[in-house]
Image (cartoon, rainbow, N blue to C red; front, side, top):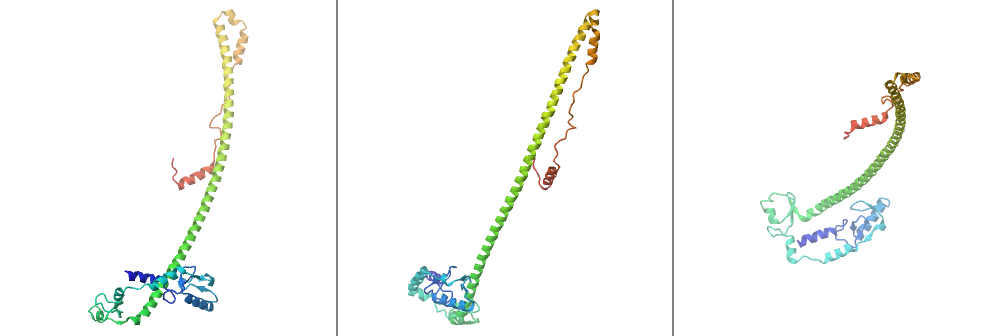
Length: 298
């Protein structure tokens, strides 16, 4: 377990250029660290071949020479790691076959695993193509390094795509907010217009109501006056008819003239069918359009 942890830690503080533990590590703004000698040589090579532009050997992000900074934290880790040694007992078992406890000196290309000379002769690996570990180490080191760089490049590209998606999401939010504000402003304007029109129509209706009711009141007063005159005349006529013949004929001509002159005058009335009701054809068309597109609860 300790050896596995040390191996993982060594990978974290290994220079991606020389593939050895970092020496005087320098870090870029992108977060990758390199040996001072390795990154300096790489920078000079980039300046010569690319016209002055330098890119990180891992993620290919451009950088300036002034961005190189000593990474003392990583340097301290490397220094302590150099002093750590695996115990002799554990060190002896590191490169031994678990089954035969022989040194792992061979590599089976068929099964792609490290084996010992007894494994090579066993039934499991008999007839397989085997070579010395040293012969394939460099080949697989290059393959793994290429795979590592590809994955890191893919990871960097994924981060860039995430940033693009984030910007697109922000842009969409701004556009939706602008459209939301525009819709709210237009409907507020429409509400203001409708409220103004409503107030105007209600005021017109109130004025019309006062005028009609005033005229009806005048008609009522006129009818009341005519009714009173008729009542007075009826009393006079009843009185004459109930009296003597002499009393009935006394000034009878005047009474007859009064009766003939008094006739009911019908007051002017207002038929509801004749008045102009409020109509808003444009508004009705708008409401009908909305009713077709949406179910309006009542």
